[in-house]
Image 1 (tube, rainbow, N blue to C red):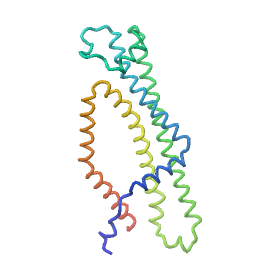
Image 2 (image 1 turned 30 degrees about the horizontal axis):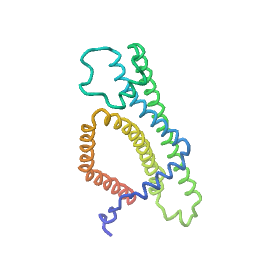
Image 3 (image 1 turned 30 degrees about the vertical axis):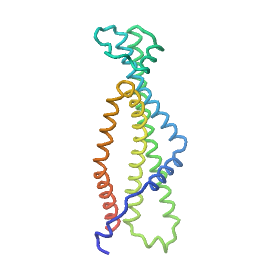
Image 4 (image 1 turned 45 degrees about the vertical axis):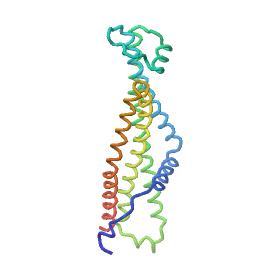
Length: 225
């Protein structure tokens, strides 16, 4: 077979991605659920800080800052619950929520890095154990470059995939909360932005497939070096 044909590989499908997600869940266990709770909490505090800005502006008593239209049901409910706090109370509440948001962001970043390193360590130990238990007749068929690639490069890529998975979950949690708030502020503008985002994703789909293909070709090239 020609070199080009050997470098032609198939990108991983949904089943492979789902299998990887299950592996990450089995390795991390309850710590993955803890990370999800931190992500959801960070998304909620991001939304709360936006709502407190409305309360802060309302408590400032400045003229000309009232919206021209009636407030959305969500904002009306928030104002009904918190009432009309004084400016110092509203400012202190906003600062407290902002500090909580920063702390949650720090904890989330630590959790994501720790889980990523845990997955990499577990996978590397499993692979090393499997290599040590391999019979010599089978072990001798492999080149040293294949083993080095598996222990170093492949595990590093698995760590990058784990980090991307956790970062995606965090982004989805925050985006969900902000989308709900945006829908309450302006449903038409939010729908327009979502449509533009979907169109952009469709336009970039070809570039994503090309990037995945290049990555697979590089992996195949490493195996034949």
